[in-house]
Structure formats: C-alpha cells, structure tokens
Image 1 (cartoon, helix red, strand yellow):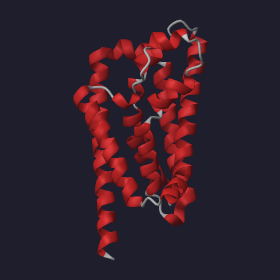
Image 2 (cartoon, one colour):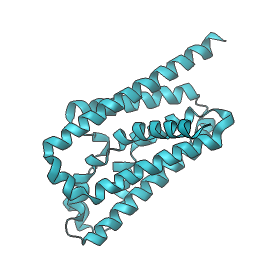
Image 3 (cartoon, helix red, strand yellow):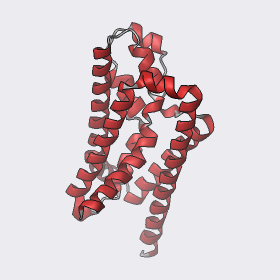
Image 4 (tube, one colour):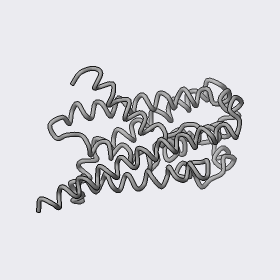
Length: 219
C-alpha cells in the first residue's frame, strides 16, 4: 500500500469518526464542569479525557473480532447494525442540533459538587467515546481484509489518534470556540457533521446489504 493510499484510508476513518465523536457537543459540559478549575487543571482534564477515549475505542477495535466470533455475529451484520445506529444518531444531530447519545443523566452542578475526576466519565465515556463512536470503529474494523489485519488496525488506530487529538485541541480552546461560534453557530456545525455522518451510515448499510446478498446468493 502506498503512502497516498494509507493517508486516504486514515482520512476516511477521521471523517467517519469525527462527526459522531463531535467534541463541540462536549464543550458545554466540559466548560460547566471545569469552570472553577485553574487553566492547567482544565488542560489536564481535557488531555486525560481524550486519552481515555482513544484507549476505549482502540480496545473495541482490537477486541471487536473476538466479540464477533464469541457471539457468532457475521461481518455484514456488524456493518448493517453499525450503520443503523450511526444513522439514527446522525438524524438526531441534524433535526435536533445535538447528539443525544453524548448526554448524561446528571446535571453539571451535581457532578461538579461530587469533587471527582470526571475525565473518564462523563467526558471520555459516554461523551467522546459513546455508543455511536464505538459502532463506527467496529464497523471500520469489520471491513479490514483478513490478510491485512495488522496494517488495517494500524490505519484505524492512527485515525482514532488524530480524532482524539482534534478533540483535545477543541476542548483546550473551548472558551474561545464557544465565544466565537455562539449557541447557533455550534448548532450549525453539529448539523453539518450530522449530514456527513449520514453519508457514512448509508455507506455502511449499503456495504452490509451487498455482502448479505452475496452471502445468501451463494448458498
């Protein structure tokens, strides 16, 4: 595989994962939870949250095939299921302006008064590495050819790392982004990302349905 092909596939992973991870939807929660912290502590929380998100998604990528084999799930089934989940989340982003999969039950004030390290939860999971992000990664993992597992995993992990890096930059600059875009601007960005995610979901569905057709037509 050439360098250009590698960059192409890495960019596909980033474009597929970034809209569903959507760090812009995490910024309001992050700002509320860290408003009484020093700038240095806030950056530590952002860095740890993105690192945890990277580890969570990488774990599901590497263990995804084992989970599939354990439960006897076919690759086309993973693609179709992942596509449906991603499509539902994407439509919510488009029509409501927010990704409800990234929401948490507790109010920011309630979490803040608990005086806990919340970089893992709720910032990393479910906000950054929620069910939608996990579905995207497992769908990408299911499309890696059997003869190129190591290279394929490396490409997807690189895409996860780049996306986590973008999320860190967004959280680190949360104050500036919120002031610059405002509430309506952030909603507009979320809707654009929802449209891009819809395209990714349709591609996953089409790929899974095609593989189902090929599998059953050969029986």
